[in-house]
Figure (cartoon, rainbow, N blue to C red):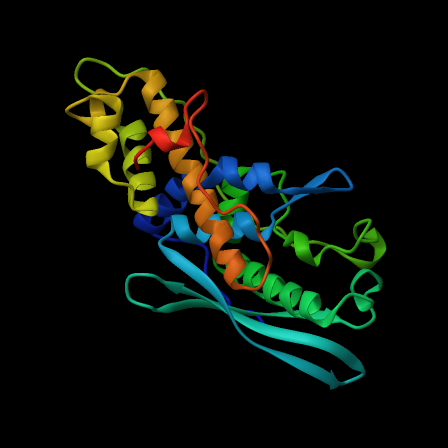
Length: 261
């Protein structure tokens, strides 16, 4: 079961997806799982995309099923907007008893994985087009659904969405302030992570974040992207996966305790 969500058709929605692709593209690519030479987006990547859109994905009740010749666990997950709670996508995840890798694992592990699959599938329903914007070489099939060793080509044909790819390179800051695209990216990361701009100003000893040097900008963006990745992992933990490290990343050569935001 998958709720169909249309690829953005108006300028505002397309721009939002393009911005989200820029915000979390590095996270999605770094956490992607390589299978048979191709990258598949993991639940952390899907959660990061959702958060960058101001959304959160959550799993509902896990059910044990045994019908139509199939037995295993199923779970439904939904993607909702964080500002008003509106549901924008819904999908079902399934973990079969006939899956060799999972059939002998404890029940709690199988229940956790079916929630993970459902969350990834729900996010894919809403945001598959963003993955293509990030990297056309990435598969939009959630990594958790790919069998050990990959798919047998004769048994599986992947459907890929097409979308316009966006690439941009930041220019050095000028006396008048940083370029508009760089400023927009920084602001979107700040909003997505609820970062304290006052503490950022104090940390970098500037009166205006637009006056950040290129090195300071790179540090700020890197830190905020790590925070965004940590938020995605925290959301994954709520689905039952054990994650030992959900803290935000650090700036290179800086103690995390010295970074106040």
